[in-house]
Length: 505
Image (cartoon, rainbow, N blue to C red):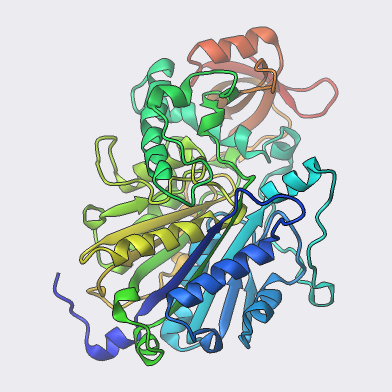
């Protein structure tokens, strides 16, 4: 494609000039690195990757929110570790979408001149904390109490009724989407399980070749879905091998600037990867109030807007990294982009969250870093990276190119996208349900002993109301494990003890 930008326009385009990644599976007591240690190591690697001498140029540092330890003020502490005088310090809210959101925002501010050189970094060390506990110790990592940044999120991830029914647990929520997805695809339960193996096995192929992957093990489709002692059922239809893994020690960092500033800093152009465009959008916030469970309006609008502002179509993307915490997220992402099962383009460049590792909110920083590495090796590559926060709730996407874009970078109006989603007709949560409805979503959770213990369902009572309910009746649980019940009738009632709702079929 012929570049249509003037030199002045090209000079202001955002570029990634440095990346760093750390994976520390062998950290053991007492030498267990903290999240700050890991992100500082990744940031130093990113600075070196950009050619050195860049730390003094940083004027913006954004840190992805950390799960495994509250450092108090991680951005300030990271700046001190790097010897940076950056004045613009940001600590992101919770969400797997937030690394890409941070990139999108940095790009906007770079183009407008608010900042000149930005670092995005994050890390997790949950595996380290586990190893310390096993050794009989507790970690005591550094905390900046005097400059503490409070943990702030604008909205609770779950409705009170969802919380009552344990819907704050991703391992219980993401499987709920599967019945609608399989029925929409025309598959029966057994056929769909086989499909899930085919869907995720290529992710393991990528992870097996990635030296930073937490589980660099290639697994066949059948191996991923076969229930064994090592691969127990977690929540139907997901075995352990289909679930994201949070207990990792991993860190990643990105350095962004404009083409003009990169040239001034002496960064060789073969280190540049161009940021073409991005977008952010939320779904209907509460899972129980979603329009349906076989599509994501938020994803659809977010991805379409990112591609549109980048000036490309989905057919021009050479590689994807679709957020892959669970198979339902991958399927919804494919649906939003119109990707068929037979599309041969990579769905991941890292190996995905179940196999590369799922370091809390920070996975997408790794995905962008790996996409950057890949695009540096191509003359005409274009990559799409997506992020997902909470429960298919918050979405972010970014388009990256090995060459300059054909259109100037233009920030997307997130307010307009969000208004489109929020205006969609959708049911509201009924907290005091009674009577018959139809099952819109369901899953059965298993104990660590391998036995099913409870069925969770989202039941449509009428076009305007939907309720969450749980059943522990053996007959109900068994039926939902062995038979198709999407769209089936169910009786819903408030539990006799008043704590939540129950259902029967």
